[in-house]
Length: 233
Length: 233
DNA sequence: CCAAAAATGGATAGGGCAATCCGATTGCTA
DNA sequence: TAGCAATCGGATTGCCCTATCCATTTTTGG
Image (cartoon, rainbow over all chains, first blue to last red; front, top):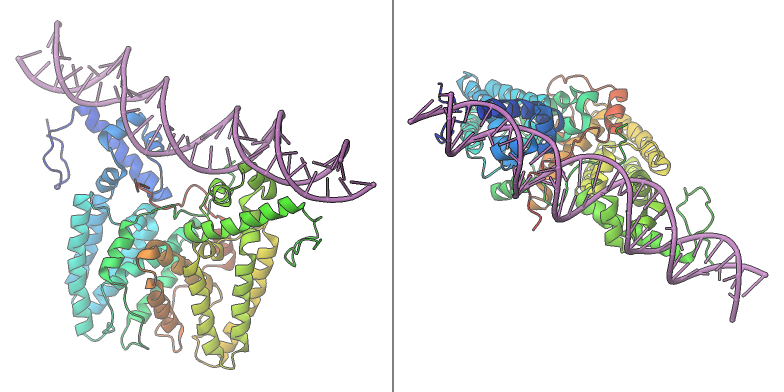
């Protein structure tokens, strides 16, 4: 009956058959769990296993990992965009700015997959990228307001937020469950350095184009992690 | 003739046959190149291919990746320890401290493998770990002196340097060749936040034990990187 | 120069992953 | 309810990785 709720961005595809819709749901639920735990590096096969569906079903529904990522992280990205909106509503732009950073970084810490999403871009994941861009525009406005109050250093650039997320992802991925709050300290340090007056000049920001390229390159050869012989026994 | 130079830490193993020694050298040279480019996640097989030796030769000489890492990064770790020594020689502890950070982070940026090494620990890589510990002791001294001059905030903890390296590794790995200098800006921001007077309190440092555990866990399930369908064409 | 010892590297076993194929099953609609 | 189309998921192909085995080649030393 219900013509498959479909996220507001779905291009009105015809509704799936009930069993297919059910499996789709099981897959996204499983993917959320697996990606949160293992990051976007998790295999499609592991998601299928977790979901209890056949591999073919996995690939039929989500031919590429981008599509799965798009479906899975859309709501996270909504929450992310929401954090920007909340920050913009704050009567004190600096307070809003700081709150936004803490919220976004906490989201990264809570979900390895999302941490990856924030430092990677997926041109084919339309809905996700639209949210990201909306959030980005809000951030630029937020930054301007915060600078206007004089609390945010003048040479702060919107690309610094991307760098912040990359740095935070590094801490989150390296510490994991062993030191789940370590990121808070690093983020707090960075926030203090964002505060005006600047204590000194900074090296130039990377060009936005370069940063985009960096985010595009998801992982060319194998950025991966050590692995070593981490015996899984 | 020359009884195999062997790094000063080698436990006086009997000298290898000349061809074996030659291959060992080819392997370490190849590994340096491959690890620098791909990080420690690179496979043993890829190193063997780059070295032009059989896989068996690879495993005979270096039964585990730890041993290879130990052999390959010992000189980098020496340089790292050297950076600490240089910093300790600086008449201005704060200046030395800043210089050390910039040098160490530049080393991370120049070598993905070393970036991983600095945020990972390999209990079985004896020589490497010894250097790390030596460097660590020097750093503690350096930190104390820098605090004594009043230029380094009082609540700075030696574990913050580990966090700094984790954050830097995140930026370096995410940006790669696309924005090769982006890390400088992040590091500069962090250095400014290290400078006294502190602009505010910080969340507690992760316990050193937890941080050690974090560094140990190299990559339990699969911290890996996105990968997605990055066509390697 | 020759034989023993050491070393080599291709072959191979065993496992994981991406992606496709196809017979069996299930949901939908007339 | 009957039949068709959509869906399912195991099997399979192809690739890469770790690790070991063993017949062949190379070095060394008398």
